[in-house]
Length: 351
Image 1 (cartoon, rainbow, N blue to C red):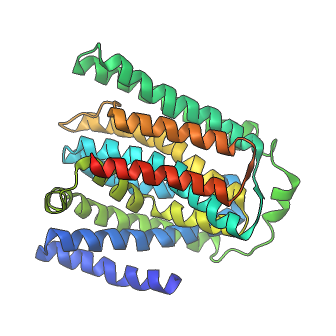
Image 2: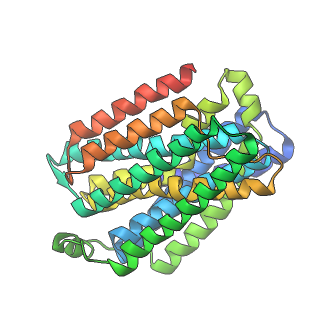
């Protein structure tokens, strides 16, 4: 599979450059750009897997989430510059749903087919559950509810305030997990498992590949955004569907692959940290950052989602919390999460 991704990368990147310069049809370019980003994301996944082995599950999961979300952050900034606020909000929704239901669901399902019962750090699960309740349900619902009684300027002001609080709490959560309480809730089993496997690449090589892949993704993403309008018209897709399903899956391909691989290797702490950590990073850092970045552009982005987006994210968060709070999982729980994702995907497609 690695050879396939290598071939896709070495063909896709030059084709992306040539196609954009020669103004090939938007639909063809859309496909090329998406496949190229997915191929580049595989390199990011392999590099972060190497770093995860060296740094441990928490740092490794954080790196996976960060570089996986870097792709979506880049796409979203270019979309904001074009005034596509609906696509950006939808892609944020898609990231939350994709990580909580698709990534976690696939990880639990694939891992559960190989192992009857898989466990992960229950303290981390409960910590993440509290943050999910705060970020997805409280911080996203409040601007929606209050915006009914506010004008656009007041709504934007509230969104900026919520964004700053979310980012501050996210940084505090990182400080809690990585500094003041580092290793406090880490089991001996997890500590021993860190030394079982050799990394594919050295630390320096992995970091270099991450940086090069991110730069390539930035170039391809900028061109990808310009194809959205034409592709939407041609296939009859809405901005909502493109953001929730297409952009979210393409933008999060790195952690999709990494989490499933980790679950298959029974490294559930890393897999869960990728799925949950990425969701929290989107909700508490990427989304607020995009609100602040939008202030530099003509079209501002308040942190106000549509009702289908909001209800989908809230129910996904609640379902994931209920399933994961015991620190154990199996293939059926994974299938339940996947079923929820398919139901929501059908709904967004038909809107």
